[in-house]
Length: 494
View 1 (cartoon, one colour):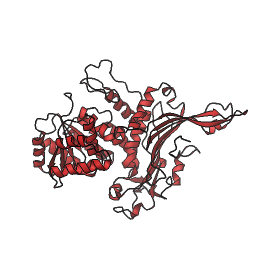
View 2 (cartoon, rainbow, N blue to C red):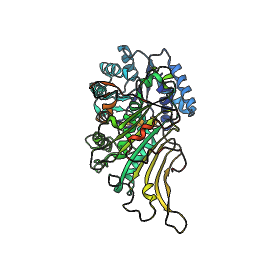
View 3 (cartoon, helix red, strand yellow):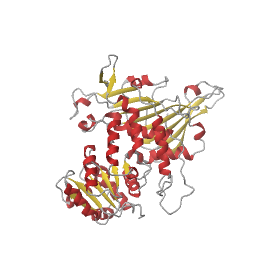
View 4 (cartoon, rainbow, N blue to C red):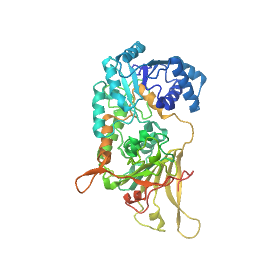
C-alpha cells in the first residue's frame, strides 16, 4: 500500500439496496483479488448488529452468484458496523474511534442525496475529513443550480481532488474501450471529425419498466436518470480531443491505472488530462432546444405504485445535440433512452459520409460506412463496409467487419471504481466542473416549456405502447430519412 492509498473504507448506507446489490459483491471481489486489506466500516441506522450485517452481506454475495468462502471470511473479519443516526454527533465520534490510527480514510456516501449534506458536515465537525477522500453517488443534483450548491457544500469539507463523483457506467469495460479504441488505432483519428462523420446515434434501450421503483422514478425521469450522466459522458468519450499529459517526467513506482494515470504531486497527470478534455467538449455542447427533444411515457406507467395518476415524468427521451467546436461543428448527435422498449441494449452508431462519387451502384450512398459500438449486454465493435456481390455486375452488399468481441469475464464497475478511489485515481470519476457542464446542456428543458403567451407549463409527454421504440415523434428530430438505428442483438449488426 502506497502512502497515497486510503487506509480505511467507511461506507454510509451499509444496510441499503445499493450496498446489497453492488457494494458487498464488489468488496468480496476486491479481497479475492488482493486489492482490499484494510478496515471496512459500515454505517447505517437500522438496529442491526455487526453479526446481522455480516449475514446480510453473505446473502447479498450468494444472490449475486459470486460467493467465495475464503474471501468472504476475510471480508467478515475486516467488517465493522456502526448503527447510528446521520444527524447525531455521537455517530461520528464512533466512526472516529473505529478508524483508530487511520490517516487517510475513504468515505462512501451510498445514501439518498438528501443525506449528503448532514453526513458531510457531520464528518467535518468531528474532524474526520482531514486527508480524507469521499465518494458521492449519483444523482449529483437535480439541475444546474442544485449541482452547483452541492459542489459548494462538499468543498467546505473536501478539496476537489479528494471528491470522487461516481458514475458506475464509466467503470464498465466496454465504456473504457471507447477511449482505448479511439486513441490506439491509427486509422480512426484521420476520419474522426466533421469532414467524414455524417451523424452519431447513441441508444440506451431497456426492455423492462420501473420495476417497482415508481416513487423514485417520479423524482427523476429519463433525462436526469441516464441522459445527463451516462449518455453525455459516453458522448464526451466519443468526441473529446487527445489527452496530453506530462508523462515523460514521471518517476517512481506508483501503479499504472487503465489509462496510464498515476498520482504524482505537482504533475499534470494523465487522469487530469482526460478529465480536462472531457470537460472542454462538454462545455462546447450546445444547450438543448425544446424543438430537438421528444419526451415519452410508456402506457401503464401511471398504474405503477408511487406514480401520480396524471404524471408527466418521461420514461423515454430522444434528443438532438450539437458540439460547437472545429472538430464537430454541424454534426448532429442523437441520443435516445427509454424503458419498455423491444430490447435491453446500448449501442452507438457513427455513420460516415458516402464517397464523393458513386462509381458503381448507388446503394453505397444509401448504405454508408459506419462504426458500431455495442456496450451492453455484450461487447462488440464493428465496421460497416461494402463488398462486391459475386457475379459479373459491379453491385455491392453491406458487409460488417467485426473488429472486437469480448463476451468473457471482466471486473465489475463497482470493483474497478472502488479500487481506483482507494488509490486516489480519479480518471473514471466526474469532476465538479464536468458535472456542471453536463447539467448546462439539459438544464433549459428539464421542467418547463415557454409558450407564446409567456407563461410556463410542464412539457407534455407522449404516450407509447410497451415493446415499441417510443413515440413516432422521435423520428421528427432526425435530419435524414434513414431514421434511428434499432439494436437487434444479432451476432453481426445489420
